[in-house]
Length: 186
Image (cartoon, rainbow, N blue to C red):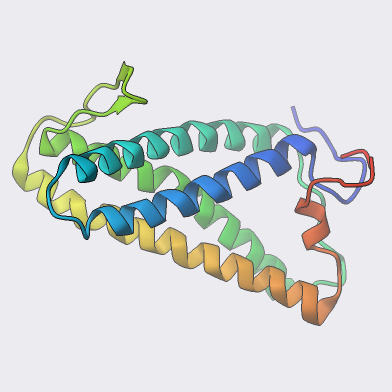
């Protein structure tokens, strides 16, 4: 079921998914960078657990967001946008969605292979994705951080593109993804 939007804005649900995931991904990346710099301690273990909880929440929200995106058409890009920019925007969005899944899944697989269970919010034990295997864990560990850095790089590229549209093009592209402040239907 593809629902066409009636205006040039994203729906309130799409906007909520965007900003919640943006905040969670940024926070999870920051916690990930910080936690690996700590020596082994209860604080480091707590941060690893928070990082895993965030990752599983990101994975869940990404699945819901993908479902929403597949069933609700995004507003069209401006007809005046050069083809290469439209292609770059589409390719970047596809890569972002792939990484929304790849980063938490590689982290979950790494935790499983390393023998560290994932217990979502300390309450819901999740199954291991792979059996305990130290060699596999050592292979997955750099893959997890490489996908995380790839995601962070695409987020920066995404932000730079928005700034370009805001400053150089003055085309209100950002307004399509901001929550409505004037009661405008979204």
